[in-house]
Image 1 (cartoon, helix red, strand yellow):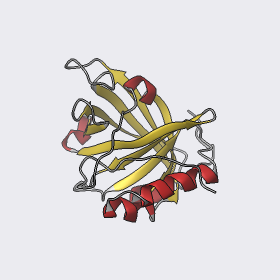
Image 2: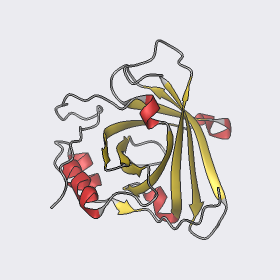
Image 3: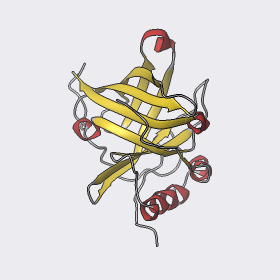
Amino acid sequence: MAVSVVLRPPAVSNAPQSLFRPPSTEWLSGIWHVTHSSLPMWKSKRNVRITYTVLPSTTSGTIQGADRLDDIVSYQAMNSDKIKTVHGIDTASGKESGAWDWRGKGLLAVASSHWEVLGYGEVGEVQWVVTYFAKTLFTPAGVDIYSRSENGLSGENMSGIKEALSSLEDPGVRKLAGEIFEIKRDGARSD
């Protein structure tokens, strides 16, 4: 039997919105292991991590705390030990939404995306987050599931998250729930 998980539809959805208190930026800070996704770009990658670091606010902040996060995505290709990184800055998209607008740094400064926290929590000592990514010129819309633990969540907890995604009143998110796959994690990172 799956664990009960409560998620909200993306703010960009036409589905009814429930009351949602986003996680604080301090809670989001640190290393997250991307353990599951519906985004095709992760099928050829392994050991995917996202590291968020709170940056000084440019305004009075949000109910989440600061309004900016340094965002470093790192991963290995399936056939390489080299760690590749994508660096950007997340800026809060509204004061209360749990939504963020990402802009790449350096050569990726022309790239941008919008992502949102659909839900988050803690099972035992393992924190988790479900994020939604809006479609861009380069990627389809997608859902990622993060865990503080490289081992991820138990099968029972993953089933609860998938069931919660499938029960949202957003047909696009329900479709994404059926496309979720596990991202390879093999402990081969040397950093």
